[in-house]
Length: 275
Image (cartoon, rainbow, N blue to C red; front, side, top):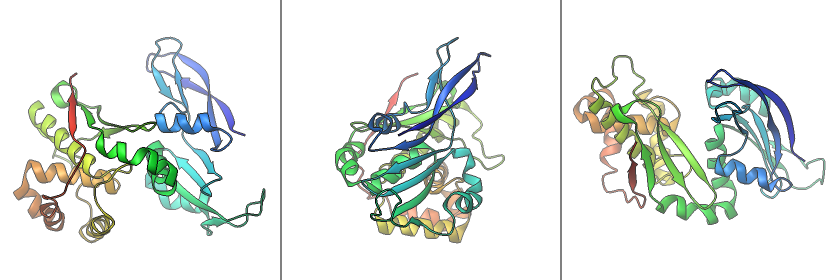
């Protein structure tokens, strides 16, 4: 049932080659592709010249018959165009009434950005996946990779039974706020990783009430950490831990919110991978 198309890929080594990219996945009919999405092997190809693994294509449609999900998965870089894409891909109706194949229950339509966004949605909407993956994602140690000098790219890795997630650790986005020394950059990324460990799309330790409060603060106080709610949390957490006084002056509501999280129980440790 899956649909795919051929794309021309150009590797950083200079080689160009053709590779297939799936543009439609029907979860029940393509379980191997569903597993590939969870593991991170979906729509990737190896460069025939240097062997580097590369992503192929961006946008695809994910259909889940059991949970009645119709999900457009766009590239993370498309997120600033969320409003336009909602109108283009979702339209005015958030459901597909009585699907044309079986006239059964309505499908619910969603728009997410990136594979991690899809996995986060599935962990909320698919009870079976949440049962099989949720506990292990929350309890197994997170692994942090920061190259020498605190340079990009740096990552926080999470792993369940099938789910494998690599979340990028980001430097400050505010102009002139980049830590000056290699040691300061590394400290920033360490604190960023701890913030991402607390609140990410796949296994947040914030309960529903806390998350509602966090998003209210983001709306009222405006930009401080940058990005979506998870990136904003991680960036704000890093700024708060690097210089609490300066952060409190800039973002008092966020600072008060973080003060209230000091007793938060987090079952997952963060362990460093040595370069």
